[in-house]
Each structure stands twice: as structure tokens, then as C-alpha cells.
Image 1 (tube, rainbow, N blue to C red):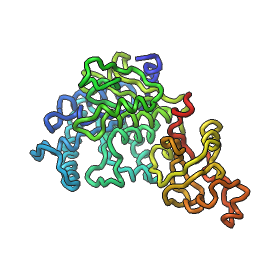
Image 2: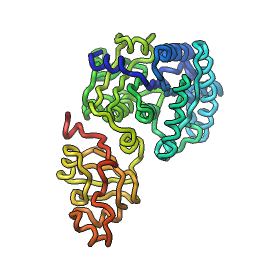
Image 3: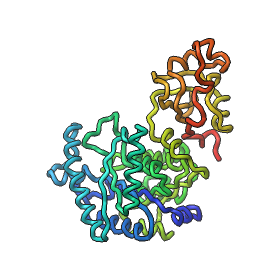
Image 4: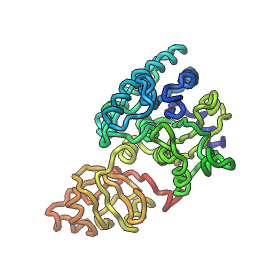
Length: 383
């Protein structure tokens, strides 16, 4: 591990650990040996004075085993029922495993609605913070029992990134079934090379990751890369490592563990900026020109109507909206001061022309810079 990675581990007081299905399961059931090992290592980290938030997959595999099913059901209600059965077994095994080290655990099941609603977001943050202050280890999973597409996180890679930002974590550790990010799939190519450190997540990295799928879980390597992009953009480092390796967590904190370290941006984003940029789901898209792009990314300016080229989607005042150019990925997310219909009317205009077009002018800015979070600038203006 490089010096930046070692420093990140040395300074990490609050850590999110995510463990995937491929690590926790065996023959469609829980791998109790791994459950015990991970619980022991997390307990040791807590005894060393660190706060650990644990994001764990495995409910589906646990449920399949308990119900005697050979594969995940195809229908959503059946998958929800299997997850409900499995979640009970999963938390029971963790409770027993952590009790061996005199540690208490708490179960927290979330949907994306719990984090996109600002009041519920703060309630979740306060509840988890209280548990940590009591020395209780929060074990978090997606609430698959009530999951529908509209309220689904997507996978626990995404959930763990959101939890890291929610709790102002110092480090996110994502444990999977391979040693980190490789330049090609190591399960297929013997000459695959581990990338020990990644400082910029560009399209090349995403392309390589997209060719390394997951097996039991929903998130392959690409979902882990996207999670890393979220947290590192917000200033939080992340590591991908092999959760099946003996003592991997302890070794990482002692500078011996193997994995891929994602270097964070130097400036840490404020909690509210993280919420806007990486938790809220955009309700539409505003396409901007080169002048607006440069003003936002290079000079930290607000979005004015003069820089807007096109509006996509229907949204109201206060909605989260994605910003992009015609040929780019989403570059930023912000809360709009105008509805989509009003932005359509004032796009391309100077601020002095807004009142004559709309009849009033509540704001000069379509999105104020305080309500705007840059989510991806590395492709255009790398550090």
C-alpha cells in the first residue's frame, strides 16, 4: 500500500465495512466461518478505538438455504419473502458471532426513500450516530422485503457509499471475492495485474471493471468502481480487497493487506453537498453550454439561464436535476429555483430578461452554487 493509503488507514476513526454476497455465502447458504472471521476482525477494530458501520449482504442466500430453495425466485414477491426469512437468520448469526467478543449489534434496514427524504436522512444519521456512541455496531442492509424499483438502491455497493457519506466516514472498505481491481479479469487471465492504487476513475477503468462481473450478488466490479467514484469525489478514500483472505481487515490497518486503494479528492464535501450530489435521484436533466460548464467547474459559479441549452423531463421548483453537456456523463446535480416549464422559457436569456419573460424574477440563478454538487469533472478538468 502506498503512503497515502497507509495514512488514510492510520487516521480512520470512523469506518464503513461492506461485505458482499460472494464473500458471505457458500452453496446458497451463509458461510459461517467467514461470518465469524469478519465479526472477530470488526470487534478488534472497535476495541482499538474505531467506530465501524457494517453493511452486509447475504439475506437472500440465507433465506434460500433455510427454505431449501436451489435458486433465487424469478417473481419479486417471492424474492421479497425469501429475503425476509433470510434477514432474520443473517442478523441472528451476526448477533451470536459478535457476542463471542462482548459486542452488541443493531439491525438497520433501509430503502432509498429513507435517504432521499431530508428529514428521514437526518433521522437515520442521528440514530446510527447514537448507536456508535453507545458502542453498538450497526449492521445495515437494504430492506429487500418492501423493495420495488422506485425505492431500490441498486446494490449494497451503492448503499455502502451512501452510508459512508451519510455518516462522514473516514474510510470505506469494500470486501469482495477477488483481491482488488485488475487490468483484466483474473479469473480468466493468468497474467492479470492488480492495480494497487487508482487516483482518477476514468472511462478506461470503468471499461475494465465492466468486464469483471459478480456471481451471487447484484453488484459486479463496475458497481464497486461507481461507488468509489461517489465517495472519492466527496473526499472519502475507499479500498477494494478480498474478504475471504484471513485477517484482511486487520492486515489492511497494519499496512500489510493487499487491495486497490482509491485516492480521494483533497477537498472534503460538506454533508449537505454529499446529500444533493450522491443521494438524491435527479428528476430531470439540464443541458448546458461550454461557458456554463467552465463557470461551474473552474470558477465555482452558479448556473444562470444564459448557459442553458435544453431541458429534459418535467420537474418542479426545488427538485434535484442533473447537469451535463450533450456529449458527457452527468457532471453535477443541483436543486433548481425554477420549474422545468419556466426554465424552458428562460433558457439562453440574461438574468435581466427573466422578469419580462415570466412576469416575475424570484432568483437570478437557475441553480445556486450552494445547492449544486459537482459529481464528475475528471474527464474534462482533471486535477
